Amino acid sequence: MKLNNIKLSLFILVWGILPALSFAAVQPDLLFAKANRLYAQAHYKEALSLYGKILEEGTQSAAVYYNMGNASYKTGDKPSALLYYEKAHKISPNDADINANIRFLNAKSVDKIDEVPEFFLSGWWRSFILSLSADSFAVLSICFILGASGLLILYFVASQLQLKRAAFYSSVVFFITGLFCVFVTNRQLSYFEIQQHAIVFSSPVEIKSEPADKSKSLFVIHEGVKVLILGRNQGWIKVRLANGSEGWMKGAEVREI
Image (cartoon, rainbow, N blue to C red):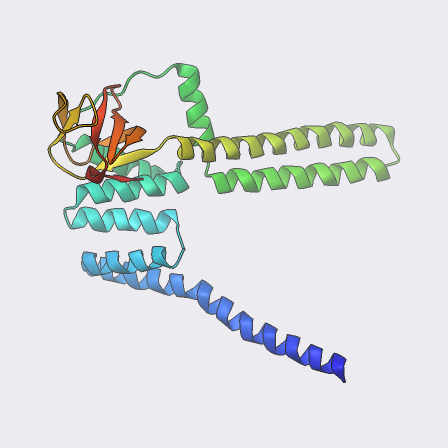
């Protein structure tokens, strides 16, 4: 009798939770579809509001940020558009449309900032680790490691010497490749975590030599410029531009990617 009660409780619990989980999964999709319809009808601010609700519910995706970038650009808010495109880039760094829109907005910026030439090996490595999303590299690592496990099983069960030898060496190659994919995934996540960038939302902004209002002004930048955050000091942040120029500005004048 007690066992039957436990079974009944588990049955009620499972069938009570499953619909809730299903609703939680469907809800962001419904909001996304509704926001897309609003965007297609040129209701850009309303679409942005719905995209924001998706983020508030804990669902982040490159598609949501990309559409928010498009909607922000349509409203004339170029700094927000660039911010959302950059957020989408962190999730899907190899997306051609996202990268094209980032280049387009950078080209329209008031400040024409030339990037410091990068050592070719550093540039090649950065391009490689960003050639796929972290999720894609993680899936590849799982596939290679599972393949290595399957080949290792084949090695133990095979009777022919040549087949055993081929299975063994192939499993080693698959396993090493899987570990390499794990390493690349980690490097990509570390790259975006260490490289703390932000978009300037004020215009014009005086970059100071020290974190103080009365310090010397080094140069001026405008909204839409992407900066690398190097340090923080009582509401001020030390930043570096793509051309290597450095200085201090107030943290309230930027939004971090």
